[in-house]
Image (cartoon, rainbow, N blue to C red; front, side):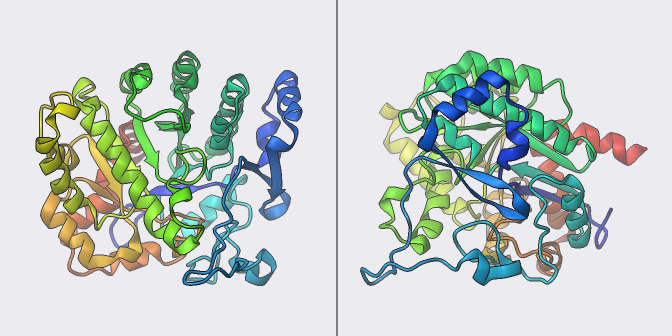
Length: 402
């Protein structure tokens, strides 16, 4: 498929992890462990008759800014066809709207992709299964990840040239994480690992080293999604005064800024020169100023860093670092980022079917940004994603040659 002469890779899409099909992949013993947790693992209604996990204490994010008033978000009933399964409203530009079945039915997802003109989806979780990292039972956490991966393998299997995803990993049990990376890497669906960082850990700790090594060995990209890789969910949530506007504005950006600085500043990309790192759903307009800020602070804080082979901004320019855009930040901010950092870092993304998706017009909007040179547009829509998710690039080459 091409749209206006371009193939399009959506670097940030989601499923809302469906309880029923995922639990079918658990052993009887693991289902018993899950049941024994009782109220620690809640289930809430999801779309198309499915359920989703709700784990751990979460703020309500329901304070109206400028007052002490508590306000309820629009209900699913009130939103009707525009219910995205999240506690805030959506930015969909339809009709049509995303199918209710996309979290468990790959055929429904691909039909939506065809409507929007998208060739490939990177499919990410929505916080349900990663929430098990916030519980004490590490054995069950690993079992839930394994069940989710088996679900993903079957979900992606009908469309190996269009659906791809990530392996969930936690450093609470490094040996189990590395074993699961090796097992899943024999299958076609994964192109990255998805580190889940519980509150007692940081992403730069030595405990992650075997996981980074396994990712490099199997050519898997380290994928940081700002809202779902930190438990309790979401990042910075206790610092945004229980207001969803502040949380959505600051949480994504803060998480990406902290984590890319930690991984780069810890020298991970120096120790693993074939490893790639990407930050998703965090915007792009701030990246040039953050890169310059990190350069200055790396000089000021040399005592707090290991020796680095380059300035932080040099890593951000590539070839090991990538980041997705958010369409609503607009054409001008993207052009400025290209001018400051070059055209090899940023990737097209929509957040489909979540609240920030402008389905079905996301690709159409970016294709209409006339100030972008065709080469820059091609890198944004396709080439950079293939460089980031290199395991998929070989598959795409085979498909193109067929």
